[in-house]
Amino acid sequence: MLVWFCLIAWLALVVQGVLAYLVLEPTGSGFTRGSNRAAAFLRWEAYALGAAVFTSIIGRRLNATGTARMVSRWPLRISGGFFALLLIIFVGLIIWTRVFG
Image 1 (cartoon, rainbow, N blue to C red):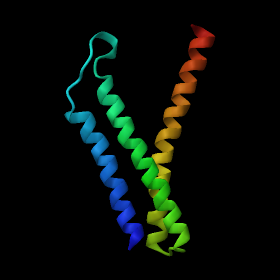
Image 2 (spheres, rainbow, N blue to C red):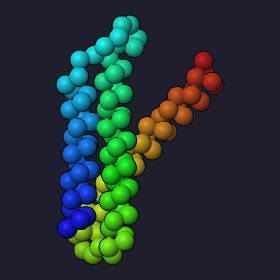
Image 3 (cartoon, rainbow, N blue to C red):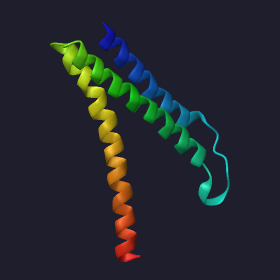
């Protein structure tokens, strides 16, 4: 039961991140216009990553089996994969600008 509650909390944080990006009014001017929206989105997604780690830990500690075991692993894979992809893109852009810029 606790694993399912953690899954719902993770999902709510992910949805809040998307809604924050869509609803917030962009501020700033020029190149930085709208960076508040991206910052809010990434903040909520970082909270969701924390919830995903907690969900995974709870699933392991409770020795979850069957569907609950699978449910305890997927949030970490999705959120962790999202941040790993962002990190790879960021490092790739830095390397690309050093080599070709």
